[in-house]
Image 1 (cartoon, rainbow, N blue to C red):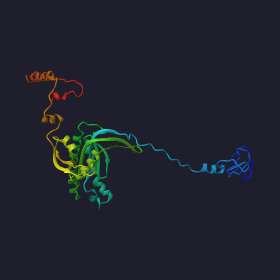
Image 2 (cartoon, helix red, strand yellow):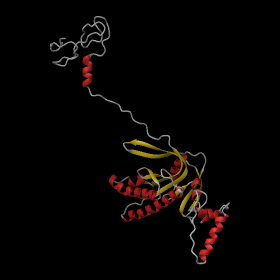
Image 3 (cartoon, rainbow, N blue to C red):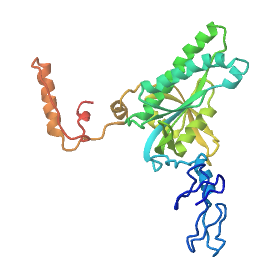
Image 4 (cartoon, rainbow, N blue to C red):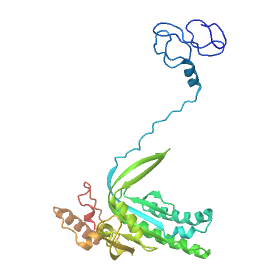
Length: 322
């Protein structure tokens, strides 16, 4: 088979010239007639010859672009949990850094963010996001805690205390002080893990209670900690709460009763709180109570006693030692 470009004779069956690499004339698959390499249909019988070999040769030399399939985010179904959400934001941060060099602004804001994150972590919370001039944190997820509402408020009080000390340092340096507003709310959400990039995973909740925490933060004055009715019920006795009355909150149809947390209350444990309300009466535990009373009397008389209580979780062991 003769090459039309260089004239070299090639053996039968070759598709490209062994001398110059030019595509050789294809033979018709129906009648066997020879055709030009760039022809698409046989000149003898009209049968389709398919993609020309020269075009195929050119295509094989072109760079190939492949679109890789991306995996969908993991665990989009999520898990239903009761959590406490905390939003903390530096008040007036835009005005504060407006006339500052970016590096200088960062040197002021970053230590404040670090103090806020440390306060969250010290009480077992999870910093879900940093918003540049604030943080969004969760308590009760991904690590579950029985008293997550109280933990969130302890963290909020610590934040405010640490930021006051930091603001004093800024004043001594001749800089404007910083103040933060904090909003805290508890309720049911759906939490899920989303992989957003190479090795980067976010653990985020979806739910009305989280959004309300953000709105409460925006309602507060600089240096305040704002909570709703749901948090008030959980925090009563553990913290000092100041009722601010109902407030209109964006995205909520009915007014929301708002409270400000101003300090620590007299209670520290849930048993102390139960005592103020009055313990429920034990049923079927008189023998155990009598045994403990006898051991206490013997101990008072100088005969030391050790009492061990063993039972399944939740049956009231701790209530025997209020």
